[in-house]
Image (cartoon, rainbow, N blue to C red; front, side, top):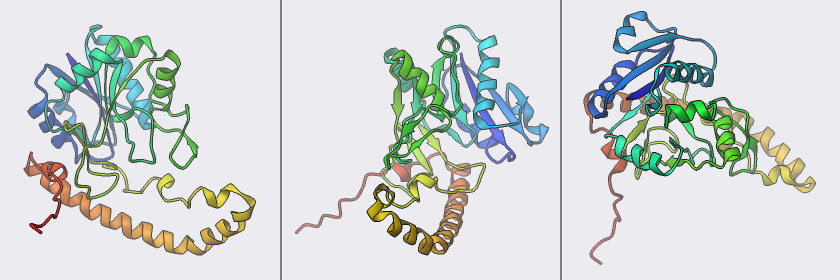
Length: 279
């Protein structure tokens, strides 16, 4: 049995989409346990169980996992799935192969300044293993990103646990050949779609918008870095606003397509054109 744990937050726009794609592509028996915050209870019958919860995303996932572990058989699977994520093909052959070789399979978002942790938009682990390692989605355990900054995010403590016990895990990586945006609208391992920022504004993580690290690295460049940051402040705010508005329009366009066209994702996986002529 697959126990899908998903979170929906202050918007019901992804509920019918996610439910439909799960029914279309999960070929093994499954049940869905959802966390609702500020969602109309009219949607509760669409899931096998709904839990009203408030607080951070990681805490909600941990709550769902604890409820699942209490009911699951030892060899059942927990599939963590963001509310704006869903399978676009049967993921289970990929999942079973990964779990034969490692403790869990999860999205790893290398595109976000080299994030190292398992990402909760998609992760599958055996229920007994989650219980045994005392799985935890909370941030805390840090890593260095590609800019040399020490940070943590949801999945940080899970990464820390895996490293401490020396347990291998299988990363599911972005497979887009066409990117409408470098972070959002991602296909992973050719089996999962994650819209990204489906429940919030599409703000690019700060690690991808900061000045280069060398501006702060030495006294020689300290004043230059400070001056550039001050001079660029207004421009950056305007660019971020414009970028957010453009991303919002793209988001709405993609959302409209995925509602009616189950093959919408194919444009993200189309082979690149070489543009080569006959000479």
